[in-house]
Length: 220
Ligand code: DX5
Ligand code: ZN
Image (cartoon, rainbow, N blue to C red; front, side, top):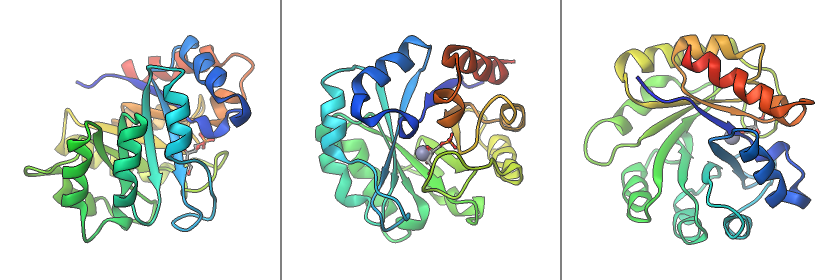
């Protein structure tokens, strides 16, 4: 089977204290730090880019799981590679014409390539990206409309996770949006192993307890 990976979404952190917030999450048992990169165009919100990743990298060796909610992901490969990103997950909706080149470049910069899909995009769209030479190593199934933290989990997305898990037993399948103690069971039993959680972790009085609970549910 696949390992449980718990990735707090730093979108819910105090951006003015990003380095200490990152360290706090690692001390609480986080495996990865999920970094939401939004361009104000692919989604109606603007967050951070390569300069912030570069600054954070100076303070931590942690795996920086970058989720690119941008219209032109290709433009971000070089700068994010240089900045020290670990994973580069782009949206299938933004890369229909150039995903092969994109995956190739991401790999050449030493990052782990992943593909994400919005709630309205059928799972079949990512199949071509999972077969052959330039394949991605992670699929991020969005369980909210991308753009903002704190939204409600969409349980109907679990059909995508089930279908994917049956077809790819050892693939990293990540879920993102509305994950927390009340929704983790649906995601883990469907077969998700990478869990992104923003508001449920940062909003908890004891984030370590939430991270442990999420991990236990995946490992059950
Ligand atoms: C939403 C982002 C998520 C978000 C998750 O577009 O991709 O990573 O921060 O936040 P919660 O866990 O609060 O839904
Ligand atoms: Zn995200």
